[in-house]
Length: 174
Image 1: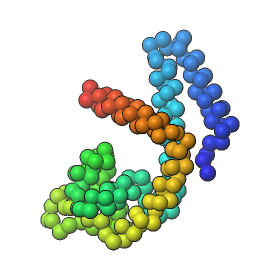
Image 2 (image 1 turned 30 degrees about the vertical axis):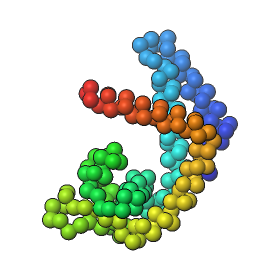
Image 3 (image 1 turned 120 degrees about the horizontal axis):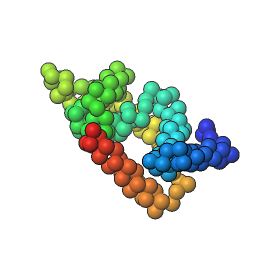
């Protein structure tokens, strides 16, 4: 069950709307950008908390399930660097995810001497976990996303890609 009931969402939106009072105090601030960003962050946070219990109960996280799904779909071992780039995380973050998945027996490393160049393989147990969890996980996500039409989801994806592009631009300017 979501942490936000509809009446709480209305209250939250009113709280956000109060940020408009910042405009006279800080004319250089784009308050609408702040409002939109806060709503996006809060929505992302709520989505995470909506679906994470299922993953946590099974010793997984969104990052771990993405790795397992990628390995299952590609049907081939992947290098940690490839996985990090695909997932949009640092190599050190990926190393932590891989270590946890390996400890749980869901993946295994190849036998290469240099662990950074070791290919990551999905184990039979890892595939079984994906086959067990994915239908439930997808159902939870669909329960949230089905409030949007197919066209609205497409627009949302396009907008999220634009936001990601803005994040990448900020990083390249730093």
